[in-house]
Image (cartoon, rainbow, N blue to C red):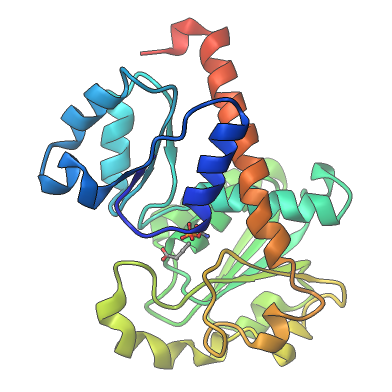
Length: 275
Ligand code: CP
Ligand code: NVA
């Protein structure tokens, strides 16, 4: 597990999960590795891939992890990039399944993500929700909406699975009658310098009691965490009865154990798929 950015949940859930599966969770921080001193991604990968069963990386540009996948002979797991956070969405959808009677409940469900519509969580909800046959709505201010190519991909995948995609600047429209409401920080890791310009346009997208009241009466609230109370979500919502954020955080552990088991099982079953 390599971390180029900070982490509490991802680091702990992968470490505990690997140990529970009988493996050794080797965690390497950027500051304590040669990667942080400029060793190429390709060289680092060619070494680590000879000593590990799976590589898990949290980094900045998506192209970095794609380069790792190119050089690795073991599975590579995205533990968050600037563009995607797929492990989080696995846990989030597991949480919905758990609360709503199983994975079959996901298909046809309406989920709304409100806030920074251009960040890694928004992109991951688009693609994962489309894959699960959900109706996915993303709401954010102008300038903070998902890139056209990701929306196009999501629309194509959703159409094949009976789902749909809506991208809007209208938070109320996105949340209306939704089964689950998601938000995330307005300032992602690596964007700290933009703090001043990122606050003002996002206020209409705060998930508060009034916005939450537009969703279905039994709608769930989820947040990948860390949360900033009084910014993207009020205490009344995140600490309120519709919030399932602690189950969501715990489900990182269970979802990732399933993911690792599947990846390693797949690798053993079909050696021809190994590079
Ligand atoms: N949600 C999430 O990935 O949290 P961490 O940044 O603490 O890993
Ligand atoms: N969008 C956030 C997610 C944190 C888990 C970030 O990238 O900082």
